[in-house]
Length: 64
Image (cartoon, rainbow, N blue to C red):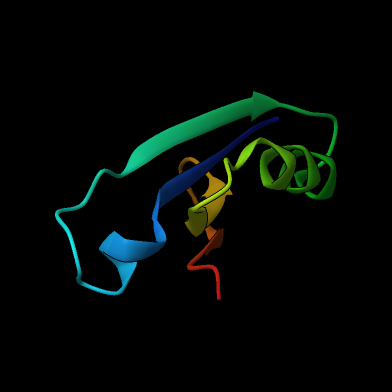
């Protein structure tokens, strides 16, 4: 299953700079495994702002 995340810098999320949003994507056996892998890929100074499985609205959510 393909799991995707949108990430952006902490400063952009706070409105202190222009957005530098990027999409990350992994192929995983389960949503949970994909989510965990994606969290490990987020660089320091960035945060995940959305996470989900494309074309499945029931899994797409904004991160906190």
